[in-house]
Length: 399
Ligand code: ADP
Image (cartoon, rainbow, N blue to C red):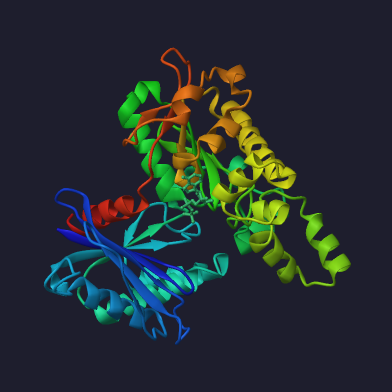
């Protein structure tokens, strides 16, 4: 059975088709700059073939989806001969609110709840919802499943997810920590548990380090804490996001720079992190610049590592010890410098990191990066969020 996985952003749509008989991806692609008539384009890649990019006016998510479906049935670049071969569509949806602890089959009630929760994710939720509605229109009758980016974290205990603000603001406005990257944390912690055996992996910290980064503390397979919050702004130092700051910074910046609160939040989301400190958001650039002696890039690197370590330290206590630490995401999977920066001083909690292997290893589904007698295992596990979505789509639509 073939599943179409869709991840819609405000002006983009990422997709993959996965053959779930063998869990192999058949093709993937990205529609970008939706709504920009001169620059919108679709870049499609069928496994084993070169990428095919075509610039064409794509004004909304319905048109984007039509473009995707037409390339999927293309004689040369396509992977199906008819759209009816798609048995289910899995949508990545940013926010579950407190309504969905699990993925769900999409019906009108689910769409209505997502609309109610759109206020919690104003940048992504409207695009997610519009894409679901477009799918309904363009592929009527094909079952759809929503997989929430926040879902995995809804098992956090209340003392971990509450902010110490007036309780009625939690009750009425639902202001609390939700956390993101849930499909990734779920996937890699699941792989780690399978690899180590459940008895050796009761206490896991998963580090999803990419452009956006977050950590999760996973006890017996369930998330008990995570570093992102009401929005993805909280927590680690990221490509363009500040991560944790004193909330009073918002008013201070607004007053001194003559900006509104919302403009300050744009600064904290889009002009901060590595970009704010060193002028570059891409971690490869940061490490290259630091290697050439750029002090700001070095500072950004150290701030990144220090913040991750602070969270590891607090989750070590929250979990009552640690069995396994997992690296994933663009930085976690690929950057030896990034991993080494995080590992500084972690021998105090029983981690014996293999710095030599860290430099050079063959990529695999799981790579052990700790020395054989390390009390805490360190694993590098490539994430696969699309596969989590496709698995849920199959599970829920073939029941
Ligand atoms: P996103 O959060 O957008 O999904 P990714 O998980 O793809 O991001 O991670 C992107 C980040 O990973 C970028 O900062 C990029 O520089 C970094 N990255 C990717 N490949 C490498 C590499 N080989 N070495 C160092 N950093 C890398």
